[in-house]
Length: 179
Image (cartoon, rainbow, N blue to C red):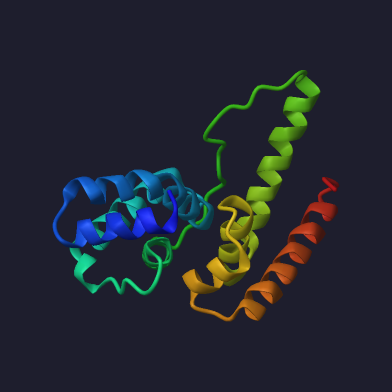
């Protein structure tokens, strides 16, 4: 979906089209869930955040400023919801793989499982500012401009946080003998 199609759907949704909002939900539900999951580290919490994100977006569509892109707005809501939930839950759990991956041999499968677990554990050790930029860049494939827009910070800050977060993760993985 390109920006003009998205803009058209947003306009229709603002005017009350449930079908248009459903199309936007379908487009962003999985990426919003993935971002929430990477921030929170819990499947059920991520589902709750995804639901509350779209509920808030639907209830507040009239406040959406069409000079911005919808995905920035929806991701900002999702991040705020995730942070709010994290504050109220005050817990960190080990992230379990959502999908079993097929591997050519048991050694490859074991290594991939260990690597995934280590990356997730490293992510959960990062401060939220660092974790959010890693999640948006590497798990959601956002560019610097988009991350800047979603988080409301300058692109230079995005780059700085990414550099620091990558360095911390690399050091953590090296200490564990993964890299």
